[in-house]
Image (cartoon, rainbow over all chains, first blue to last red; front, top):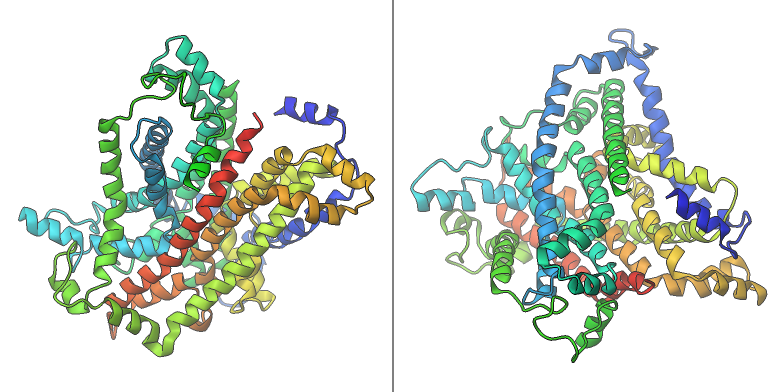
Amino acid sequence: MAESVVLRRRRAGFHRDSKGWIFVGPFLAVFALTFLAPIGYAIYLSLFREQAFFGGTVFVGLDNYLDVIQDSKFWEAFGRVLLFLVVQVPIMLVLALLAALAIDSARLHGANFFRIVIFLPYAVPGVVAVLMWGYIYGNNFGLAADLNDLLGSTSIVPLSARWMLPSIANIVTWEFVGYNMLIFYSALRTVPEELYEAAAIDGAGTIRTIRAVKLPALRGAIVIATIFSIIGSFQLFNEPNILRTLAPNVITTYFTPNMYAYNLSFAGQQFNYSATVAIVMGVITAVIAYVVQLRGSREAM
Amino acid sequence: MSTTTLLRSRPSRPLKGGGVSRTSPLKPRRSRLLTGMMLLYLVYTLVPLLWLLLSATKTQDDLLSSPGLWFGKTFALFSNIQDTLTYDDGIFLRWLGNTLLYVVVGAGGATLLATAAGYGLAKYKFAGRRAVFAVLLGAVAVPGTALAVPTFLMFSNLGLTNTVWAIIIPSLVSPFGLYLMWVYASDAIPHDLLEAARIDGAGEIRIFFTVALRLLVPGVVTVLLFAVVATWNNYFLPLIMLSKPNLYPLTVGLTQWSNQATGVGARPIYNLVITGSLLTIVPLVIAFLFLQRFWQSGLSAGSVKQ
C-alpha cells in the first residue's frame, strides 16, 4: 500500500491542483449529511437521557454506555449474532470459493450458465427472499410441511426456537453465496496466463495450482468478502424482523442488536438509549473489521 | 455475438486452437463429476424460485391443499396478477412507481456522484486528498443500520420523514461504488490523454464528460448495477422513514401485506403476497441479465492492462 502511494507520487503527469474538489465535493457534501452528521448526532444523543416525569432530557455523561455494558438483553442479542457469524460466514464463503474455483477451472460444462444462475439470488430483494423462505418453512403450505408428510414425521419445524437460527442462516447463505462467488471469480480473472503456464511447466497439478497460484491471488478478495460478511452479520435485521410475524414467540424484540436498537426507538421511544446501543455495536463492528483487515494484509506480506 | 463476448471475457487466456493439446492443464478436459456437484448447488438455488413461480399460479385454497412443487387444481396466475395489481385501488402499482422513482433518482445519482468522486480521487492530487481517504475508510466500517436511528431523528427534525427525500438522499451515497470507481479510473484513464486534452484547451469538467466518462463506461455500469440492486432491495430505511403507505416501495408494501395474515382482524392474502413477490423479482432479474453482457466485458477490461 505505502509502496504504491510512493510510486504514484513519483509518476509524472499526476495533475496537481485543487480542481479535484469539483469532482469529489458533491459526493462529500451528501456523505457529510448522511454519514458524518448522523454519527455526530448519535454520539450527542447517547450522552443524554429522557427524564421520566418532568419531560426533556438531562446530560448524563457516559451513564448510557455503562447501562449497555450491563444490559443482559444486549449481550444475549450480541451472542446470537456472534454465533451466527462464526458458523454461517465460513460456510457461505467456502461454498462461494468452491463455486468460483469450479467455474474458473474450465472443467465445467456450461460454466457461464452456472455463474449466472448462482448469482441470481442476489438479484432477489432480501425481503422477497425472506417472505419466500418463510412460507416454504411454514406448516401451512410450505415445503417443510410437504417434507414432513413425505417422511411421515413432524420433526422438521424450521420456525421453532431450536431451528430458527439455522433457518435464518440458510436464507442468508442462499442470498449471498452468488455475490461472494462473483467477488472471488473476478479476482481469479486477474491472474495472468503466464502464471498458469509456468505452473504447468513445473508440473503442478490442479490442487497444487489452486494452492500456489489461485489462493494467493484470492487473498485480497477473501479479506474484503470476510469484512463485508462480518458487517452484514452484526447488522442482521431484515430476516428476523420479517420472520417475526410468522414466529412471534420465537423471535424476541431483542433477537439481534439491530432489532433491539430499532425496537427501543420505534416501540419504546427510548431514542437516547437506542442511539447508545447503535454506537456500541458500530464500534465493535469497526474494531473487528479493522482487526481482520490488519491480519489479512499482514499475512499477505 | 456470443463468441466475441467469450473472447472478451477472457482476454488473458486466448482460446488457441492448435499448440495446446486437450489434456493440457491450460485447457483441461471437462469433468462430469464437477458439473454434477455444481448441479446439486444449482438445485438448491433454484428450488425456492421454482416454488415461488408455481405458487403464483395457485388460488389461496390451492396453496393450502396442493403439493408445493406442483400445480394446483386451477391455474390462477393471470387472475392472481390481476388481483395483485388492482387490490386496494391498485396500491401495488403505486409501490412499483415509488420503487422506480427511488431507483432512478437514488441509484442514478449515487452512480454519478461515485463516478465523479472516484475520478477526482484517482486523477487529481489536491490538498486534503488523504484526509478524504481516511474519513471514507473509517465511515465504511460503521454499520449502515447503526446510523439509521440517528438519521431518522435528524430527518424528522428537518421535516424530511414521510417524504421521498428521506429515501433518496441516503441512497445517493455509495462508498463501495466510490471505491470501485477510484480503482477503475486509476487504471482505465491514461494521464497523457488528460494532459493532451488540457493542452487542447479543454476545461476540467468538459474533459470529464467528453474524454474520461467514455473510458469509464464498463466501471459505471458495474457500479450502477450494484446501486440499482441496493436501492431496489432497500427495506430498513423506508421502514423507519415512511409511515404513509402511499410512499412505500415494493419491499415495505409486500411485508405489510404479509403481516395482514396475523393479528386482530387477520385478512390473509397469501396468493397476492406470493404473486407480488414474483412481480418484484422479474424486473430486476431482467435488468441484471441485460446488464450482464455489459459488465462481463467491464470486469475483464480491468484485467487487459496486465
